[in-house]
Image 1 (cartoon, rainbow, N blue to C red):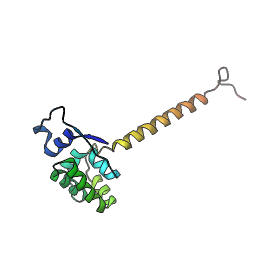
Image 2 (image 1 turned 120 degrees about the vertical axis):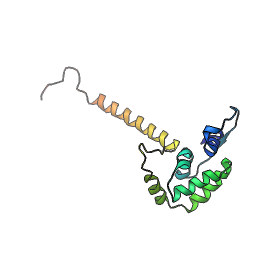
Image 3 (image 1 turned 60 degrees about the vertical axis):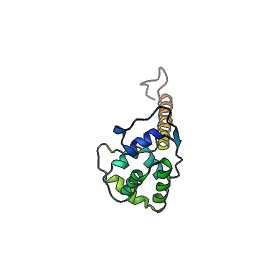
Image 4 (image 1 turned 90 degrees about the vertical axis):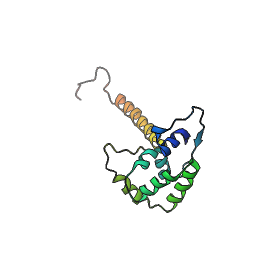
Length: 140
């Protein structure tokens, strides 16, 4: 997954006070788990979170990182000892409407693909189940 380093730095600093030249390089962050993909997709939400527990650890890692490499290293250390259920419960406690967490890109893309497959299959089935011309309303 490729993340724009300008966006990453804007989250770390505060996007209202920073501007970057358009030639600032992109950085590739390869995710290893669902959890780190979720964090990288929602850096702003985690940075601004008021939750404690696992979300607070992630927030502190984001705040304490000066580079993408620092964050990757911090996330690795957090996630190796993380209890996934505790993170899930912490995220559910955010209680904001609408819920601010976006799924990782690979999940969104997979769900979009699946939705399209279901839509196509529904069309195939509805076309195949229509009565033939001249047979509508004929009782046997």
